[in-house]
Image 1 (tube, rainbow, N blue to C red):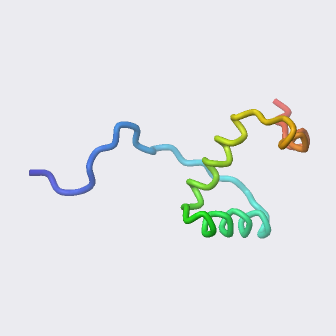
Image 2: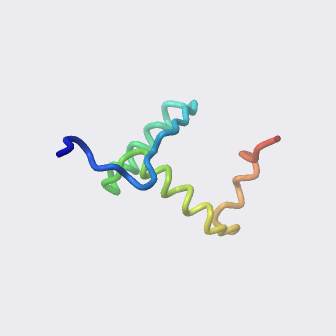
Length: 68
């Protein structure tokens, strides 16, 4: 018999560190709390919404485009 958490099919083994301003972190924390999500889940949900490719809603994102 094994003890501990069950094995996941797609375990989260990678990390991502980003720099945020105090206001940006507060915004993520506030939205996560309002939606009863973890900060990780809130950020991932935001990425999912971006992938829906709604250009009218996200037209101001050009300032954040990667220069690579």
